[in-house]
Image (cartoon, rainbow, N blue to C red; front, side, top):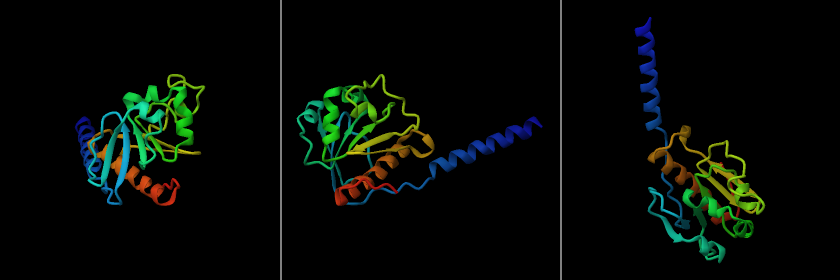
Length: 173
């Protein structure tokens, strides 16, 4: 009986692992996007995406209006949640994306709420987007964090950002 249980367990693990490696992950092939980024540039597969380094000071000075979006990486999230930035996000003509935030989007747009005191992001979204009165999250495939699932998440985000560029609206399938 014990050998049977071990065999079934091994088959389950092998099957699960092979399914994770084989999920469909199309590369974004839409129009060129220019994206500002505060922090380290992620490793993406797309060649039609320009990532332009920004500082948090650039955000305060609104030096991002010629871009299609701004990404803020995990390292800068606590600073990005400081009160002086809330109005920038609320009035921004483009979407802001908060990468690997452990907190909900309100941490960034509520000037009375600190990052530490904001509610925990229980949905486990890898990317949290905000534009005007719309917020959304994108998670990793099966909540597994590896290079392929992260790149897939960015590819899906680029589709949303292209739709925004073309329509002025956040449209999620």
